[in-house]
Length: 78
Image (cartoon, rainbow, N blue to C red; front, top):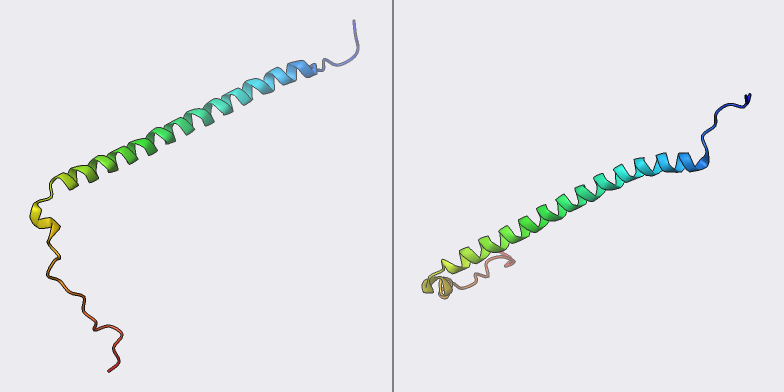
């Protein structure tokens, strides 16, 4: 019988630490993957929406501002 206290070996501490680190890394990985999927979904949705809006244009939309002229009222001292 030994009188020394039961001290865990460094290898056992490393294994326990690795399990905790694995959980943290797994959570970070899943969170990052979720953010990537969300960002990709937002980008694809915006592209599809802009393309759908562009397809609904009529020939008159291309010339809608043809008659407008810039006014130079601003910056003129009175």
